[in-house]
Image 1 (cartoon, rainbow, N blue to C red):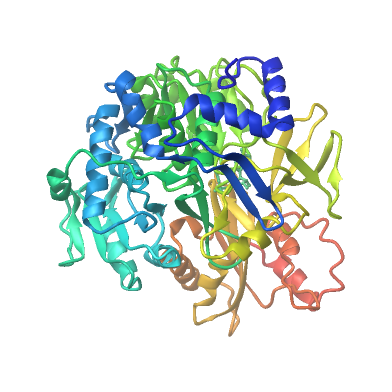
Image 2: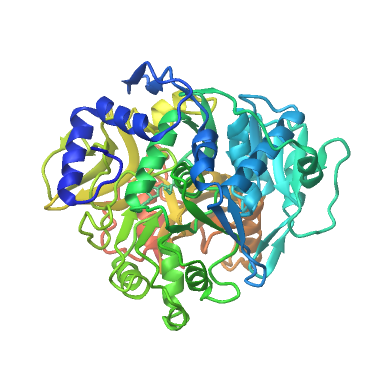
Length: 635
Ligand code: PRX
């Protein structure tokens, strides 16, 4: 029996039990049946969470692009692999078949080689959602270069930090990008970043908006002429199972962003297997994930997972509000999308605009709906279910992380009965545990605690680039022998999980992970600022928004420093990007601190959320008097 496609609940439990009892046999069967290996493994799994060290399919050799492209050519050569829908509805969609993709990836791979990029080199990709983004990712993988995609909404300074952290030799970008009615000068941002990146030797520039940009002689090259000259055949580099495939940065609660390292074989097996089951994918489907390839969702479920299954994956360049709030639904109708995967923030923003935009379009092609990135509230869940799925398309609320590589807790559509706001059951092979504050596992149901994972799964990140100790400290030190997710969760009476949110200082705004420390660092650079603390507070559309408490060197009489507010947000935009801007800024005479000098964020969070009835005992604070003052002047 093939374990690849789960069809009913009993089968889920059966396969789940097997995957837990005999994980090695289970994953070996999946890997044997469904992929193209240059050499099979010697050992399925070795692991030690105390180091931490995890190896899957050791000894195996493969190239992930042969699995995502080459092996489909005989049976699916003329099938659309990537269906590109441009920003403007007036520009025609582009159907890139598997044959086309093969040629374009191979040409791109040859261009990389000609520029001196070799196996193991790091290449930074800073591109909008155009086909070149997916193609350059695959071209790196073809030659064994490690791609580091940086979301093209990050500022030049954030880009420079990421380029330098992993010593990228090359940047791939475009002359600019379209975002709704606006266009953005991406190349200008790259030029600024590269002032501080001495290790970058070359920049490949895709033409997208035909703007007049500066090209630095000897460093910058237009991509197209190089592709035109390159051969359409590039032998795939043979990679070891545990060779790094990519680095992807994610925010931590402290310090600089963490370059999560994902390796080749396990990542491929798990993303492909989850894609097939979580979306109940069938050969004729048109699958659309609205994420950006700049995030893990795009890596795993726009590029690698779908292509490893020979699927058609829609890539949308634009935004849900352009030219109006009906755009998503227009695209669903136009391409007869069967699986639609988006973020709660997008659902809330669209729900606010009413159903008028939806009713114009035929959404009957949709079989499965998905959400990811943050908890979905009950109202948004029902809106999605009623109006988009018409109560016929199950919603898969998928919980996972950049670090996990693939979906971890999720319903399987038509298999797991769904429950609003619940991510429901662990996926096959995943062993969650809820932990109490004393480090003990909480057994049984109707409990809540901190979410950990007890056993390795194939697509887990293996380290943080250049800082294994930080990897250990962040994920494997809070609880013995367990991966700690940073999330809180509850388990209901039937064993369904509901993710309740971060238990650390990471704040999720519109589905984007933001660490408080880098934002505070940016604010503190303002010459008038002495100290700051950022907390999240509930927001109707974004899920959370940011509230900044800022103390000034000279507080003065007036609290109304509107210019200063603008300057602070400008600094944040420059250092991180507009996604990290603060919704509210309160200037305060002081920040509440413990006697050891630690800022009491719990109190600040409550004040920001207008929940001041139960602030707890503030008398032990170093400066209890500031609390009332902050409450009195809260925004
Ligand atoms: O807090 C959880 C939240 O997003 C965090 C991971 O963010 P990131 O690494 O950017 O990856 C997002 C896309 C996989 C988690 O620690 N999160 C993600 N999915 C859900 C979620 N919270 C609740 N429900 C979800 N379905």
